[in-house]
Amino acid sequence: MIEEQVDTKTRLLDAAEKLFGQNGFDATSLRDITTGAQVNLAAVNYHFQSKESLIDAVIERRMEPVNQKRIQMLDAAGPSPTVEQIIEAFLAPILDQEIWQAGPLIGRVFSNPDQFLERFFKKRLAAVAQRFRDAIAQALPGLPSEEILWRLHFMAGSMSHVLVFSQVLPAMTGGLCNPQDRSALMTRLVTFLGAAFRSPAPRLEKN
Image (cartoon, rainbow, N blue to C red; front, side, top):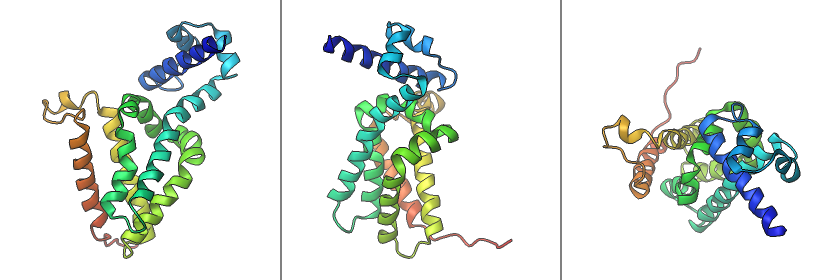
């Protein structure tokens, strides 16, 4: 009985993850999910109680291991990590094979401001983001706090863009950009973002 329950719960999570990634959270109904999982509606109520709880469970299943790995990599880089080590610690867990397959879902979370703020940032990323903010401040002591925050935001945007467009980038670029080569993708991202973080703060006109 326990094995059957676990299997049903996993099928619901897998079906919900796929459909949320394809269609978005609002456009995916519980009936869509139960049809995809080949279970009845009562199974959702039994395991998750509501669609909102199911969404949270789907996100947590993928993102909690990512955040744990991020902190592990940041700690492993030592007390004075380089900018490139910090960037890699933030991005590499997202490019893990299992997480990469969930790219459309993660892209949906990052591209939906309301979902991102309430379901992801406040619950699962705020403390992690602070660790990376502090690490960048230590690595680049001359960079103003405001610029650090903007550049962390731009880094997250680059990551979400690649995730959202990973399936169509080869067609968009005539095959020149293949995100499936994740080692090369990581090298490019770290090189690009490392240069961006190290660039001088812009001179802004005061209004």
